[in-house]
Length: 94
Image (cartoon, rainbow, N blue to C red; front, side, top):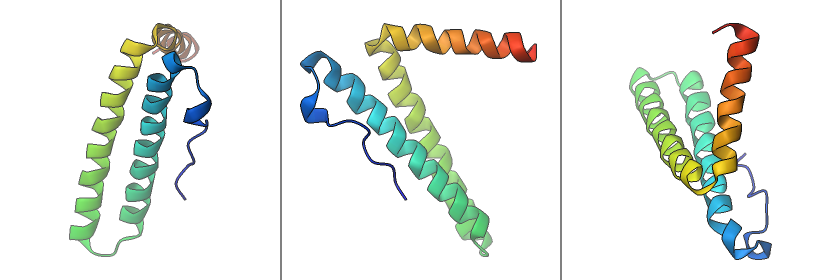
């Protein structure tokens, strides 16, 4: 089941709307990735499975596009993403 937009975009401050639109778009693309990968896992026809996985890959590109825009619009998000990378490296050693 697709996720719902987590916030009421109509109630946001004007300066936050674009960032929340980008976050909602990322959520929608991740939902699509999950849906296509789950359907591919169930498909018995190899061609259907192949196309579903190809489309899932395209949706991952869309996630990257929206994330790149979000990181331009929200410097705090960019800093926290980098902090998350550092923490993973510290914990895993990789």
